[in-house]
Image (cartoon, rainbow, N blue to C red):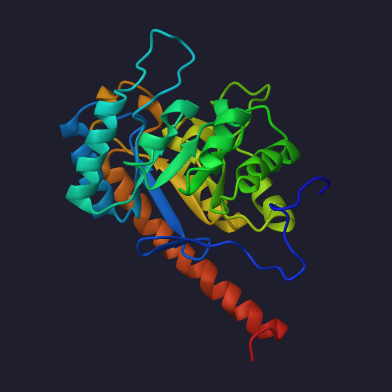
Length: 282
């Protein structure tokens, strides 16, 4: 794709992998799960324990919450980051959290294993440059009105600053459809695989906004070749201060994880058998 110097897939077909603890994103199928927002220490730590028990590999939670309305819950800020740190100490799960201001990047790095750039900030070029210089892996969500080319060029901003640990995340785009929160564009997964070496995850929670649809779209994302999923989980979703309608409770998450493991195993076996048939493995 024109103008892509660093994000484009090379002729050798080599794909980027990112090691965080024992997890290798781009090689292992990774499930990142947790609440939309960090609301309290009890809520966050208990949810983290449930995520770990259910089979989640990393823990997500928003200490800063960019919201459509200025009157909605905006997150706990520094207090929220300290709570995330406690959740990591209790569970051992690496932390993924959003940073929304270039001025906050350096000290959010003290708490986060992965810096998330949310959909609303995908084209915040000052922020992209700052996380590019931060030396931490970056999870870059697709903007809700953004094309594939625009998305990859935003990744290029991060890569151009010397940070090669970029993870893309499809989280749905805004269309004329009103039944779902967004329209989850799963065609982006194979499209990214064709054009870029960067790993790509899918967020079916934001992609649909409806709990009844998330399981099926998770399966579809796996079948399409996603490198992992972002799922919202809350210890008590009905009390959540944000995104209550799209968060699993611990029991629902654990059941989904059992199905994901089975499907992932099936897909791996199918790929292996196909490779034998095609002669790629001898």
